[in-house]
Each structure stands twice: as C-alpha cells, then as structure tokens.
Image (cartoon, rainbow, N blue to C red; front, side):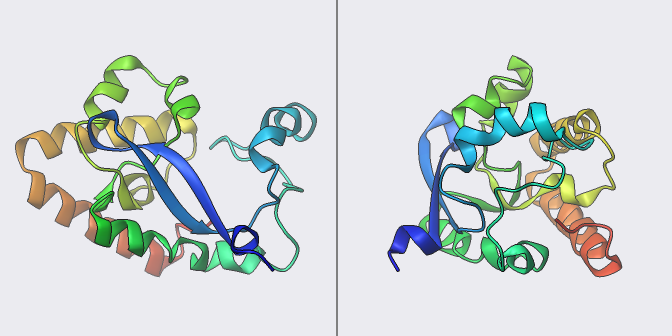
Length: 166
C-alpha cells in the first residue's frame, strides 16, 4: 500500500492566498475531485453542497469521516503554521471561485482553521455557512483571540451535543 493510498494531499489557499498543502487521511477514491461535478448532476447534493449517497467514499473508511479521524494529519499543518486552530475551512482555488470576491479577500487575510468555524452553528444551507463565516471574519478583525475562543467553544459544544458530524 502506497502513502497516496492512505494520505490525501489537497492544494489549498492559505493566508494571503499562498498555496499550501493540506494533509488528510484518504477516505475517497483518488479520482473523487474529477467526479464531483458528474456526481453532483446525477446524485444531487444536500443543502451544504455534499453529494447525496456519495459513491466516492472508500468502503470501510466512512467511520473515519464520522469520527474525524481523517483530519488527524492536519495536526502536521497546524504545527507547520499553515493553518490555525480555528478558522475558515481550507479551500482549493476552484472552490474560492464560487464565493463572493469580498468574502475571499477577507478570509484569505487569515490562515485556514483546523476547526472550521461553520461547525460553530447548525447551518442548514451553503448560504448560511458562508454567512456564518462572514460574521466570524468581521468579529475576528476586531477581537482576533477572543473570537477564536468564542467560536472554538461553540464548535466543541456542537460536537459534544452531536449537532456537527460529517
């Protein structure tokens, strides 16, 4: 088994638009990104933009996603300083193209987060998720540390209550 069979490396934009490599345990087949738009049309997506009954997920690794085990390699990104503890989800260049330019410019002033801020709310739609990120970014500009503490507390409460899971 090769490293690429277990570790997934995603190219994302970090602080100031710098390209970073984000590490995760592989839970999807290697061609998952290429198949996204095809499956989006055939299977449809939920309110948060995730493929319904996603066939790209590797059998036996669904539990890794449920328990967030697939996120453990991001600790390496945190130690390297590529990401912060709390922040906007690390997104690839193509993902940023679908968001308002103002949102992208504001978000890329900061490092992406190990704990994404959209886990701090019970967002039911992609638009609600973006709105939550926008509020976080506005608050962070005024009180960076207090904002991260506040959102981290909300994220942990939602995880413990079972509100947030994949």
